Image (cartoon, rainbow over all chains, first blue to last red; front, side, top):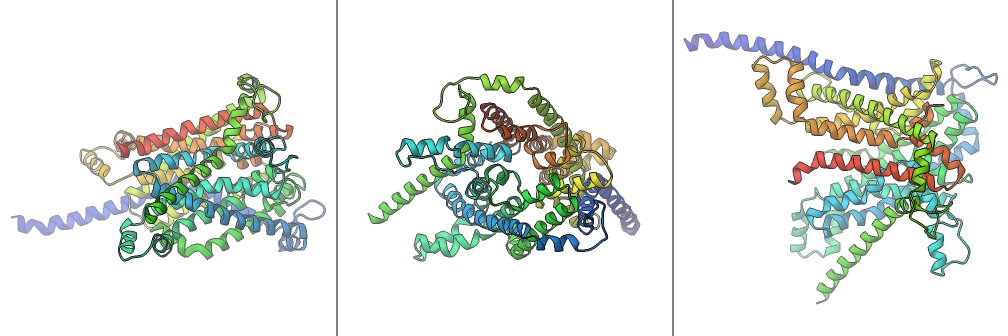
Length: 301
Length: 265
């Protein structure tokens, strides 16, 4: 009885499964649809529109001109714009290097010197100021750096300086503000990578006679490169596109690209040019992504 | 002996370095909070006080309070929308098999890899192309774009296999999909949903650039603070900054407790 029924049951089951699979496809798509539509309309479409804008420069009369590369040519013909792009790239590079150099030992100390049960807390405390807006954080640095601020006051009290140093409103202040933020970010990504490394590798190396430095340089450091790279990439994305920190701390001697973009929007009322600049900025980020792709992929595994 | 000494020395050095890092990280926030209690016109040393007068001023400042109200509304609405859309999408991807699932997942988190300036610019260009005027609604739209991917990722990580059995059992007993969602899935991952809401709210309430680009008259709190900065250093700005900081910390602590509290116990 059971034997004769088996094929029938199997056929019915496979029909059921096919129906279930079809329903799965429809239902799965239906659940993701609202989010997909939102991202398409309010994220993807605006970016496409921006690209279109960037190819239709404003004509001298104020209307929109013919489609062409006019804006891109105009960008590279204007030395102030190219300089802003260059300043942004250099500033970002300095910030990436400095924040990684400072964050790595910090993350390493938390991962190796702090007792395990306290590590989460140590990390949570280390990134606490991360949760304030750029505006408040930059203002706070302005307070600390101002001629009568805490830093100058302390230096004066210690007798190191006799006249207040002009610390705020300089490219150095911008870099300081950025490095402060990205130390927190990079500590987080590097720590997350360090605790994933199997401690037995280092123990094995030590057993085989390698010193502390040698085992760090040949084992821990290479294995932590993916975490370093994720941190570096996030730093590039967030740093090159930030307007607030340079605008509050940087003064007006050396403008960065986002500042020039905002000037196009607010003063020149030239949205097509602002779109062109934003896309050029994105191209720089994309190039960095392609160059680092290998390590970013590894980090995901 | 040398080895013992060098290890001791290394630990001391690491401790010193960590203390220096903590000092550097907390320097600006410490200065901000300390001088919000300053009894004087300028938030710089020497410190006099403490006084709560600047908090009183801030709470009595109509523009600031209007900004605070707007920020709370934008934060609540955009976070609720982000969690709702993110949850539905995560459920669809975790529980159903359909072609293009992986690509869709990658596409939905794409806004996380793009700077806020680009998202804000895109919305501004859209407003201008359709002749719409800047408004708080556009801030909500922008904040959902940046926060929904995050809510999606958080919920997706929490939709494990173990809840699936209960869903199957309920389905066998004849429950509809809507009923399964409301009576089983949502209660089971409620901590993740609340945590995602709090995180989205924190990010929305701190966000400046998108709000700055797509609003004009009705603005959010960070934009009001931005305009206050033109007046130079002022303890009232310290007070508002400290309030924002405290609010963010409270929300992040809630997230921490909800998402990781269980694991520790």
